[in-house]
Structures are given as structure tokens and as C-alpha cells.
Amino acid sequence: MSHTVLLLGATGFVGGQILHKLITSPLSGPDSPSVGTVIALVSGASKAAAVRSWESSLRSRSTSTVLQIEDVDRSTPQHWYNAVEQWSANVDCVINAATSDDLDLTKAINAGIIKAKHNGRKATLVHLSGVQLIESQPVGTYVETPNYNDADAKQIQSIADSAAHRLIDLEIAKAISAGAFWGSIVCPALIWGISSGPCKRYSAMVPDMVRKSLHNKRATHVGDGTNRWIHVHIDECVDLILALVADHLSNPSGAGRDHALFGSFFFASHRDLVDFKTIARAIGRVLARRGIVETDEPISVPAPPFDAQQKGVRIEDGQRSQEDQETDRKTPIWPCRTNCRCIASRGPAELGWKCTRAYDDAAIEQDVEGALDLILAESST
Image (tube, rainbow, N blue to C red; front, side):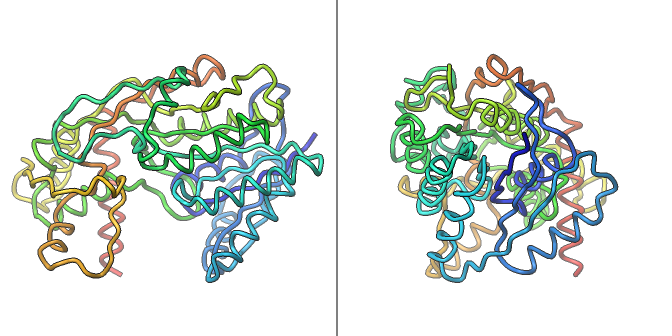
């Protein structure tokens, strides 16, 4: 049986890689479910054109999956939400890789999936959250944080409602545990590597550190840089997402699965941690090798004061002082200042998922080289 998948976020870093894998390689999993059509919902004609151009440039298509690109005007938010609900009501699986912080979008997706279930579709969901959910305060130094394990639903339930992404995750988890539909929440770590998608090729954290290092004319970390994060390669992150898509299409009721609140919650992370001084040193080596800086030794900038109510998201309101704006220009973004760790137990145990690619010095330098090339190309246009 051939299935239809709706993808939100196809022009993003992770969403683009999901799109690439969906249309170039078959799903693997129980009963080998097949995807006949991928509907990529994008906002704006320029994004739709970029996806079409990218698709036509692909050298090979190893599957017969049809890519359907739908351009929806987002100038009126309610029009966008209505369109998302309508499309979600006519597919077998929705993958939301667009945002983990839009509650109205989440409600629209959920409402559409419930309609899809009533219409006889498989009606499942894979939603991408993020591990800022469990990060420390942005202090730029190592502090102990709880080591959350995705196999412990009660521990995941204990996360504060005030945490970043939490209200969106709760909206989904409650619907799943109530039996409204079946689905999963995937919570990725610091994602590294190069996406093969149509638009965004790199994630945010390392490129931002490179930008701030160029501004400061020295590789830069915040505080003493001993703050640490878990990480995951883009390919392995997407492998977990698509393993869940395959699992849900094969078992759309979630039979035999844990239906407790957050019983279908998965971390996507490697077992090792990386600290931000190590990343800054790699940036220094690349910049020095290219003759952009005189020394490869990084410098430290202080961690700015923070408002705990920001939940990891700084909102620029146009009223910030010149001093604040200069701090933003020279200081790596919020997640580069925090600590975050967790244990991804469920993917390997339940889906045979493997996360083996280490973010070692060579991998970090490759990330830095790519981000630097992108930044320099942007500045020359």
C-alpha cells in the first residue's frame, strides 16, 4: 500500500534532509511501508520555486515517490493554519519539521489528523521538538543538569511546563495518550553535518559561532566555554525520524506501544558530549589556516544577563539599546551558552536506530569550513 506524507519545514535544515531522503530512498521498517506522495507545504512562491529547482537538479531518484509542492500564503496567519489543517486531514502521516514553538500550528495539525483518522487515513504524526527543553541557564560554564532518559516517561513528564517547547509538546502528548491519534515527538540534540535539502544546508549554532568569531576577529566562546551539549549527525537524526514514520504507517493505532503521557517521546543524540571551547578552538584553527585571524587561540566573552521567561528564545523588539545590540553582534547565541545532556535509549531499543558518528575535531572543522564558506559567499553578494 502506498502512503501520502505531509511535510512541514521542507526548506529548513532538518526538513530539507527529510525531504531528500523521502524522495531518494525507500522507508525501512515493519512491512516495508512505501511513500507514494510527499506533499511539501511551503510559504511563498520563491520557496516553492527553490524546491522545484532543487528537485530538478537531483542526479538520481531511486524511488517513484511523487513530490507535490504546495505554496500557501502566510500573510494572514489564520489562512495558513486553516490550510495546514485541511492538508493534514487528507494524508497518512504529518511530519512537522517547521517549528517547535507555534501552538496554533500544532492545534491545526492535530485537528487535521483527527479528521484524517475519521476519514479512514492512517493519521499519524512525527513532531520535532528540541533539547532546549532540558537545557541549563545560559551561563557559559559547566553546570550539572538532569540526565533525562527517554525510556523513563515519568521523568519526561516531570519537566517543567515553563521549559522551552514544553507547551507544544504537551499539546501533542496529551492528544496521543488520549487516543486521538498515534504519533511521536522527536527531540534532537545539537545537529551537525551538511543537509542535502533544497535551501538551508547548515544548522544554527556552529555557523553563529563562526559569524561572531569573524565579528570579533578571534574565535569566540562564552564564559570559560566548558558548557557541554549532546549532539547528533543530521543523517542519523533523520534516520530516527523516518524510522518512526515507517513504524507509525505500519502500526497506525500504536498497538503494543506505550500510550502513557510522553510514552512516545524520543531523544535523538549521541552518547558523547561536546564543549563549546572545543568548538571555538576548531573555529580558531580554520580561521588561522585561512589567514583570517592571526592566532588560533579563542577568546571569551561574558555571558549576558538573561531573563528566565525567555525560555531560550530572545525576542528582538526594536527597543534594545545600542549596547545590547553590540552584545548580540559579538556573543554566540543562547544555546551556545547552556548545558544540555540526555540519554537516547528508545530509538536503539525499539527501532534498531544507530547513532555512531562522533563530533570529533575533524567533524567540527568540516562543519566550520562549510559554515565559513557559506558566510563568506553571502557577504560577497
